[in-house]
Image (cartoon, rainbow over all chains, first blue to last red; front, side, top):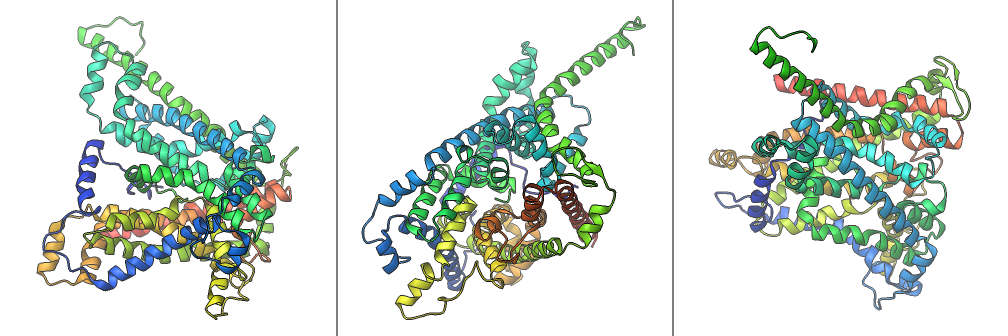
Length: 307
Length: 310
């Protein structure tokens, strides 16, 4: 069960990371190489091809969101001649997108806060306190990370119906918190271990209790770690489909992913409004990503979560 | 060590006090762990353990479960739908252990060798990974629609190859198309993962290889690949485990159809438990998949041990 331990799930101490990152900014994320590199035109061409492969379909989404149906027929993929906004309005009113975004916001916020509390406290305990069976607990977390959801899905579903948590946003938040806490705990633990012990020991000598040490000393220092964990968890929850479609029955409770899927299947071949709805769903994430690129990338690279 | 016995020496008193504070420390530590453990036991731990029992019962999910021993196992062994779905999961795994890994390795290695623009390329490769699966599914349904998207665009230049090709509606193409779209969203993540690992390789090794007259291919093979081995193993591990769980793209693109041509076990478990009310049988399917996951982890562990010895 230790196959996962050697992954890049270990984040370097925050200070060191930042320095390396800043240096990386100058040369495009790659450290200087002595000897000069022959830039091979073949591999560069292939990189351009790969980049086009990755980004052109996304551009199709953006372009088609602003095309009228008549233009879609004559211009199925290209740049729109006029930017129509009517698709966005139609998608918004027909697709329950406002409701979906609201539900997703509740799910994301609830899950991120829940994971911060649960994983933060657990990570502090593992990093600084005298936990019995520390190795056993760490192993258990790894088992939870690699456990297929199908192992507990069926009993969980019927337990949730009995507890009245089925078709209930809070019930889904609980599930998401449980699923994301193990990974976030390990991530935050590596962060907290990197904080010099002298700082919290000084606070303890001054008579602070463990809760004060955790919230007043460690939490401010571990803020980057919490932000990274929050981004990874938030992104995973925002796009989550499997539990969302199984545990949310009524359309009023659908998160944006389920609402969008329902809309897309109800309006097949009406690509203008479909793409407009998709654009509405994607924009918050892309905006946040461009704003906090490096943190996103480092966080996701350390998570190994298959989206 | 009872707290009431009188300490014989100062040293013993000290160690006893230490023991007490140790105990108190343990209580505080467990208190800090308790929220995470409570949520975990409610959602993951408890249901996983009860799944071990329900897997051997006949149970609709509501009302009592009747213990039936190995009946579910016998039924599963003869269940064509299950073997069909499992075969697709195996194809999924084979595809994802090869195609995106190669794309990721190539992309990362090429990016690590260019001076300018690497950061931009990295962002472009990564964007599909950020987009939710349902939106990616909609994008590709539009592009691969035989009457719209790419087919219509080709028609305008007089090419009619794709006019009757139903990528998501043809039994021969559905699974491949689902894998293609899923990979389109995934491979950029591997580029970023591998690139992060490659930047940590000591440059002295590359210089040594270059002094020995190695070309780019040899550098990749003898310096880069060994240098990122832990990350590569990690990627192969998560892909193997995740392949047993693949759900989103098949669900959003084809729903497992047409006629089960792109069905996966996760979709089948979902339909069996909540569509057909066969919760006991679905629990056994879930147990089987988890056991397969365990077997995969053991195999990977053994392979790694063998590698380390050689």
